Length: 441
Image (cartoon, rainbow, N blue to C red):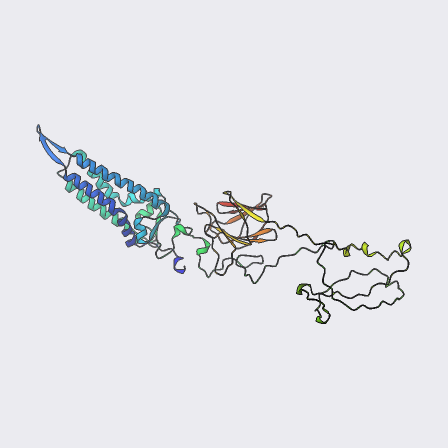
């Protein structure tokens, strides 16, 4: 793909070859039909008047002109939408407008009118010869005009050779605001985002996105993104650590001093290196922890209403209360996007969106979402989406027309190219002339 990144203007020889291939057939039809028609004219004299029978000439000439007009309309329609024609395809060139997109039938008609002005003049002269019956001088009138018309067409087509702007335009191109590019040697702008081109056609040695702290496209699978965890709720059940068996120690009754009777802080469990000597069964590595041994308090004197105020019942400590039974996992929200054309998609972990999205070398993408865009307002690879913690990180992949996000409260913010932005459900993402709505299923 390295040799297809630059735009190469079409050489004058290829332009002339394409023009000859496109118009040799209709030109031959016109020449043959009019030649046969003029040769079939008969002359009779009656009552001192010369009468010319031009019925065959009119019939054949009308057929030739009709065929040429139909061919011209078809050629304008096809080349206007795609920049392609029979001659262009065979010579490896494409016609475009001044922005590098399909030129349109109007611009091509103006360009063809300037190029074929001499041939058109010869056709008009042939009509005058028939109307005014200048048949004796027809050969001397039409032959020079036809030769001049052909010479003018060739001269206009090759006029790009002395164009000061990189040989990109001939005289007819300058008037019609069109360009012609060599797609055999360079990039085809009609199908790759115009003259500017999408970011995916930039040289591969440029970084696709800037290095930022947020998760971005192209992150390696070996370097997972750190997702901030919410603080633990002391009233919520947590999986208990697997305790290691310890030898019981006798408790010797001792008098309780006021300092020892003060409320003790909660017991803190710290992970330690497990000792294989005391393990009774295999324990998963993630759960191999040992509780810190603490000296239990001596039962306080008295009980019931006569117990001291500091001797709180263990059930009164809410921080130590644990719920019995299995934990019910919280439902996981499924993120979906709804395009402005009504299509609805469930998001995978990573998604690329564009006209024909494709990942960079070494980039692992789970989902490619192609969006039709006849107006070519979106780039080939326009957006990168990364699902994270109930929302989506959206990164503009240096698109031509940019992207923006409208939050649920109506605030619209333009996205900076290469800078991930966190988008929560209920927001609308704008890319080019298209949009999608982020929601939860």
